[in-house]
Image (cartoon, rainbow, N blue to C red):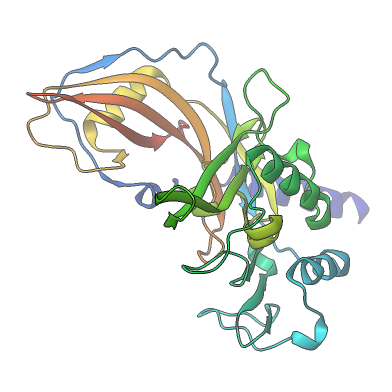
Length: 320
């Protein structure tokens, strides 16, 4: 009887691992693009490209009581601020907290690994004083201080190639203000935003709208104005080999790719300068069953009067 149980368990595991993965949702990255007979000049080195990569299956998850307590503390709220979730597809396990008539909010979507803290009082509005907005090094330090409170270790994040430094995106908010001392209008930074990227087996998430990572926004006095995380619980599903250059060229010509902008019909040639692998994790509001890697191509479209930079994306893996 024990032998039969072991055999059945093995067969079930083998069947689960042999299931062919779906394809990545490229439509989230741009519009369909087929280059057809347009000449493609390939100048992108591939010697550092991984030979294979995994597709990940999204599995159920929950946030620990400690993490939820820390989120409430970061949001400046307690259990007494609990309300009814306002997400369109709210599930029974979702949590929603609000204070000051919606000025401060915390939404938690455990099964999608998503939460969002928002405090509308922190970033100065026109006519309000701008005080103590952190510079970039200080904003990064503040972000790193928050990581252990939300259960994320630096080793789970993308780092700059060949460096121990975290890879991150910087965005600032500003307003034009009249400075009486200078007697002219000046640009004043009112908030600094940093996005840290999740790493899957050494490959960075693409960080689509804060997905696949953590987005921090700091305003007056270095206070947290917003914290958004999409960090699904995953398990490896199956590994596939990375496509060859010849396959990428075929997919670019046949329309198995998307472009981040409209490509004019008078494009005379495409030069591919760089290829970078990314994992495509969607924002917390989007359901997702599998997380796939994609190939990002940076290049130039040769037009009659200029060269236009663009990004194209196609599957990274050969699913055959």
